[in-house]
Length: 339
Ligand code: PLP
Ligand code: COI
Image (cartoon, rainbow, N blue to C red; front, top):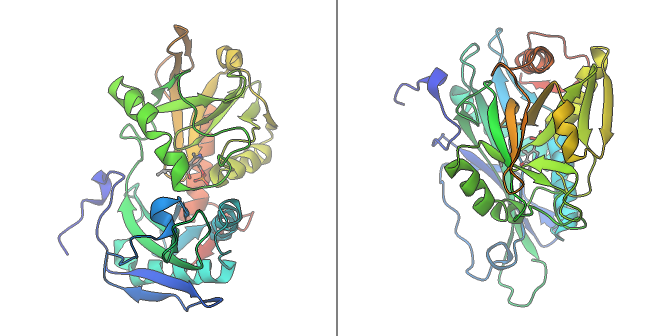
């Protein structure tokens, strides 16, 4: 293996040694088994290609100071993948198969887990797709579950430096009663045009408004949204956003720190009252928001006055990272330490 420059990794794909696969056929999931192939051979009429039967997850493994690998909240990702299965009628993947495959993929690729102190981590990408020939709009009868891993650096190149985000009124990510709450490829396809436009204009991401009233904050393209004011952590409640595991963790950590937590509708105008705000997710971790521009309305909400991350975001970031790396006690039992 060529030397990896761990401290300068971006968020991208790098070939590792193995990926792990389990097939659903004749009513059974096969034992997760490793392969070195990066390719899959599927039927041209597979439902994942035509009718979007595809769900994925994202979680991370970290190397601690003690040299041990730690995986963050794996069970929560397994459960969310089950909810994605129900949402698009895929065969439900048992939690045990998910966990076995993730553990196997991490162990077999242990040499790709970035060292403690590099700031990087091992991104774990579980994927579930419908296989088998089907031409009518119907769920598949066979499925493939696959887990690959890749070492990554920060999702946004600025890392923990605040970045601007854009509200575009001409795009929705997900419908109010649609698929926004599950992690399926279609939601990300629907976000590509607006995301591309945002990047071209110098924004790190799109901050979507609720699709029905265009009044309340929903979430960002690849992450949930939070705002801070009056010692309170505020995050949108909506029927079209992904239930972020990072956000759920930060809500508990904020409470542990003696803050109030509010999960409720957040009107766009409230942006002018936040002392801090950020995007949160596995890939994004906490990415502080510099400014929100409501582009068509010609309105701008400056969040970070000095261009730096705020004190509460910084404290939350350090606490979360500390738990993930094993520097802080894992009081909520979030971490699986590999033997
Ligand atoms: N929202 C969207 C649309 C995402 O893609 C992600 C990333 O997974 C998140 C939120 C954050 O979720 P999590 O913290 O579980 O990674
Ligand atoms: C994640 O945070 O794991 C994501 O899935 C975000 C993006 C890479 C899709």
